[in-house]
Image 1 (cartoon, rainbow, N blue to C red):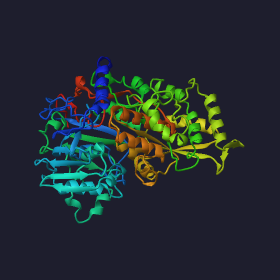
Image 2 (image 1 turned 45 degrees about the vertical axis):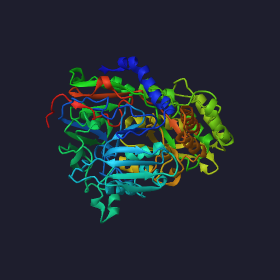
Image 3 (image 1 turned 30 degrees about the vertical axis):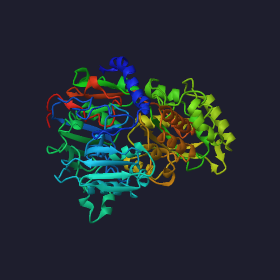
Length: 616
């Protein structure tokens, strides 16, 4: 097994100091745009003449086929609309953006499709100048019209909710000269301006005569890409294959140096997790990302590992834990009562579930930004955090200011104390057990839990939890659906509880409104699955976006973390402080130059390479 935890221990303090300096210390420096890149606070770490990103191997050889496995299916190749189920990698592999993100800095963007970027002094406008060499995969130029069309189409109904949140905040989009585009907003918001550079840029011409055809789900319309790969082969529901474009316009950009080294990326789809794992063991896949600690310790001693054909790598990161667990839909009773939500959290026997699933090895998620300098601190709110929350104190849920912590159990199968606490809370909310059935103002309580088909781990977690809910007199059942149905139902908020995960960054900003903002309460397709509709959430996000000092930003994020956590929207499970990746021994990555985000978007296979070409 390739272990990098020793190296991690040596550099933890330097990485954390670097991250904190950028997250916190950088606030003391006035924002500055320097043509080649733009940082949220301070200057980009890399100079204008940088040669490559710090976590790539600029000498990596090109070649080979990377085969990735996924559980589920797909019926669309358009990742930008609500309809259909799409291989998630297509959003990143097939579409270029004006700016690209460095995962060794909390939030710095460097030019990509844009040749330069400038933010005005009062942070109300950003101007991108297109690289004159930028081309789509069909050889046509990327134009200002393509950028503006992409902006407008992604702001329409039917587009994925992640793109629509910022649309209403932009007051104007205008052409500047031959290759420039300027976005203007009414109020200073540097983070919003920067995120505008992260939107996918698409070719407008195929949709000129029938723009609404963009929103039709299906496999017959392969996208004309602007990124290093083109879609070269598709077998409906079985696989998607992408081939590195030999004419990719940006291959020599410093931002792309040492990246996109494999010639072919093939995404294979399997009906369940068992078939997926067996295919990897048989050598049909290049890599396997494990998320279960017990499985990592138990299942990876098969012959290919023993012979050295498969290598086991442990990759650390410095990201917030994010939130993973069972989300409660507050748009529906009884989840609109915080006491019921707390009861359902109390009923989750975490220590026992963790022992069964992970041999007790995984740390519990204690808040949305835990495991990072941005996470809420234990105990009562103090200092600037308390000052931010105090004006809303009368409307905040218990625990927001006083402090909120998850209860602990003894790890036994029967958690009587947790069930007693849950019963008490349910009684306070007006629910009583009658003839063994929990009954409230609207009659007997029934809860359906929506889970994605194919994940044995998630189903095992839910099955244990169902037993606890049934002991409370709740008619609780799980519904496993395929990936297409799961996407359709979550987009429509058609569930009582659902398994979901939010990954959060070291530089939270406007995307927080897309995650928990009021637009997502009714508007379909947002990531506000719980239907959070709390003015305190918006107030803390506004305070975060308006922060002018290091103290104010960190305090606002910590206050937001308190409001979300005390909102009791999710039954939280665990997070991984590392990533476990089993992979072909010839498949390499920059072991000694890991980014602070670790195994994250644009890590595998983007910065990996094969030591030798693999047979097709």
